[in-house]
Amino acid sequence: MKHTAAAAAVLLLAPLTACGGGAEAGDGSTVTVTVGYQSKTINTVTAGTLLRSLGFFEKQLGALGDGVTYKVNWQDYATGAPITAQMTAGKIDIGSMGDFPLLINAARGKQLDRPTHLVSVTGYNLRGGLNTVVTAPGSELASLKDLKGRKVSTSVGSAADGTLVRALQRAGLDPDRDIEKLNQQPAVGASALAAGSADALSQFVAWPGLLAHQGKAKALYDGAQLNLPTFHGVTAREDFADRRPAVLEAFLKAQAEATDYLDDHPVAAAEKVADATGLPAEVVYLYNGAHGIATFDPAIRPQLVSALKQDVAVLKSAGLTGDVDVDAFVDDRYVKKALGTAAYAERLAARPAPARSEVWPEGADRTTTFASPSLLLRHVARHPDGVRAAYVPDATTGTQWFADKAVWVADGDELLPFVAPETAQAYVADHGGARVVTYADALERAS
Image (tube, rainbow, N blue to C red):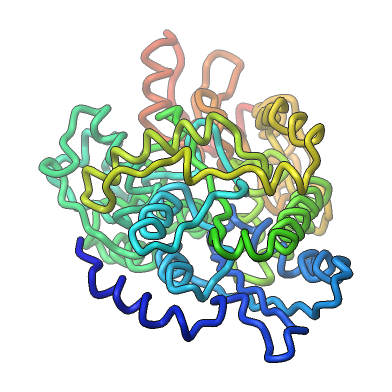
């Protein structure tokens, strides 16, 4: 891809942007900080939607006491690509996006001499469960191998595309030859799936959960089967960080506050994000809840950096980037200072809590957990009109999923949920006497 003209345009505009998104008023007393975020990419909420609704960043800026009046310009985008374009044009100071777009952000920043850095993490899943391949509700497709010769919609350059490529390769298929890949935005792909012009859709949070919740799709492949971390993070322009380190530190302190709020008030946080985005709160909670698919923590874990390095090869093979110096891109100095050295070390040492079976009762502001999926099913069976949503962890990967959308297996007296049919069938093949049952049958057995 050629960017000579774009680079020239950036150089021509540079003298006119007056420090880009952080442009100052003529008297030097007012500074506008521009933050690019993705409201519906809900694993970035602690650096975007939730943070904005709580006002923590503005409060942190007000507490700087440096005699400057700060204004925050929040800019909402559907994907990470336009955020990167605005950052490399000097118009956005801080942005949040997924891991693959972060690499493109790093590559474009270096290419256009507007370097950026990964300064914190928002939501992550160490197994890769944030990405899912889904099919139409009535589809006969039961495994990735069934996609041979089919049309699959995804967003090239996204983490969901990375999941698709790797999953197909592990299934013995060539992503370039054995399927017809449709490069589409998530909403377009969802429409294509509904219209039958796509046989499957590989997408990132929150699209798979949303479509499943709406009854418009069912899971075909759980990204956690790859057992490769996927995450979202915060990127900042290098020149902004150098010029306004206290402002960046204030942002990261505010992000940590928003993270603590989400952890302490998961239902309220889900409702706030739902109100701001129009997404169903039940879908937001699937990913961001107390035992949701995502774990939120600003610390930049070594496992995530390692995964980022492995992701470079996927983007290179798609012709979207060349080599990316991940070590130069990652800069944890600011988040370490914002959190404090000791607290940062504690966060790195902590491990995500295991998923639990969980019910969100109608009209309740908190959820109830159960020791097993069978106990959850018994509760649901006894309270058919009192459950707003029920969530269960995949018996193989731990990925949280809606109980009524899971594939259930009866193994003696045990009832086990799975996100996708292939993993359920693999369990059945290894456990004599186990068999797949319907959700209604599972409820009856549990009761």
